[in-house]
Image 1 (spheres, rainbow, N blue to C red):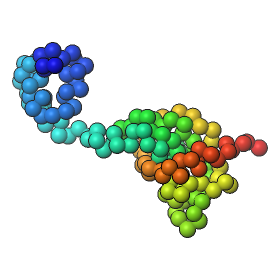
Image 2: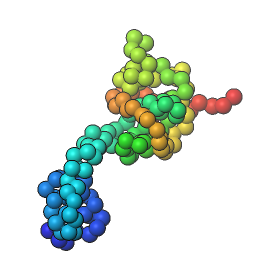
Image 3: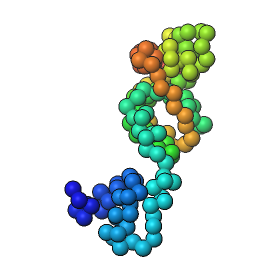
Image 4: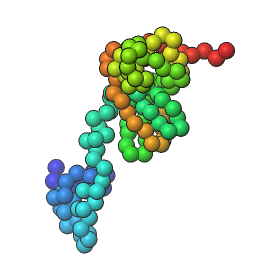
Length: 147
């Protein structure tokens, strides 16, 4: 498809790609100012995209610690599928650190987790990718029941 055949939505997507394509779009739409520098300042999607589809532990400022599969994410937040809040988490390997240990080795049976739900976290967050062993373990812990 040539650049002249793009829809406006496709053109917007192209704006996120390369400087040369931005220059072509500037020319096509008769834009006088050079907005190609904006491309360099936009956050790299590669940094975020590598986490899509991975099972992670998501640590946040106010929402606590959650585990789930990443559906979407950017600098403003993350959407987790089958998210479980980790109320109390202890790694199966007692010689490892807390949530990082859980991400690598899995959770002990006395850990407390919430029922899985899709969750949107709209605040600062960090992600730690889980091993397959850890994912199975976290998914396998019984839901915490209220007393």
